[in-house]
Amino acid sequence: DAGITQSPRYKITETGRQVTLMCHQTWSHSYMFWYRQDLGHGLRLIYYSAAADITDKGEVPDGYVVSRSKTENFPLTLESATRSQTSVYFCASTQDTIGYGYTFGSGTRLTVV
Amino acid sequence: KNEVEQSPQNLTAQEGEFITINCSYSVGISALHWLQQHPGGGIVSLFMLSSGKKKHGRLIATINIQEKHSSLHITASHPRDSAVYICAVRFSNSGYALNFGKGTSLLVTP
Image 1 (tube, one colour):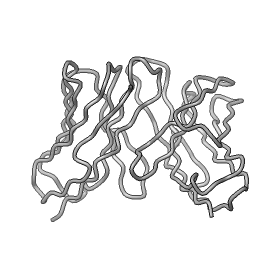
Image 2: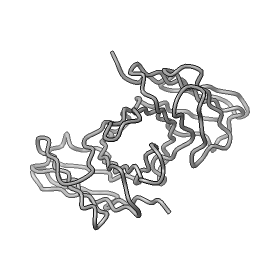
Image 3: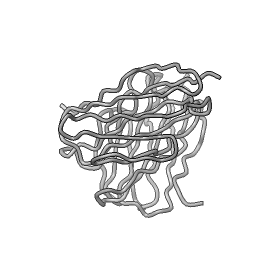
């Protein structure tokens, strides 16, 4: 089915380990985003990408790295996971057209122990 | 500063009641989105608004651009409407990223 696929759905990792969350979209949307959702904060932007090889920081980028070598993939890497990065992570995409809607992935629940 | 405020934070209603969730934002926008998230679930887009009013089934969304305010109404609420409703705004001055309210947790009891 077309849409956004996030993997894994659930992940438990240890402090200090590197972990990568995957996001794949089938619509060739130009824009892709990574958000984290935490109680009391709502969704906050980590990184976004306007096109392949173009990425930029959002509100809470520290401790995260992204890349976008292909339009359809936008992986998020936690270089050295910390407990404060325990969260639910959502990937989203949209087209660079006024009035275009946004599509969200199903989320990845990450626990850092 | 680009801010999105939602109220109330939590809402409990009895089945059949009319429900209103409010969203206010700080500066000019390109569009406002209402989203729904069921417990443990993904995020689904309900409406995208830049002016006026939209209706889909029992859900109605309105926006007043001059007052920088939007409302989501649910008529004849049902327990299956229980979810978190999130207001998200694309500010005119911040590209294509969405800015989110903290959400309204709605529980509809039979």
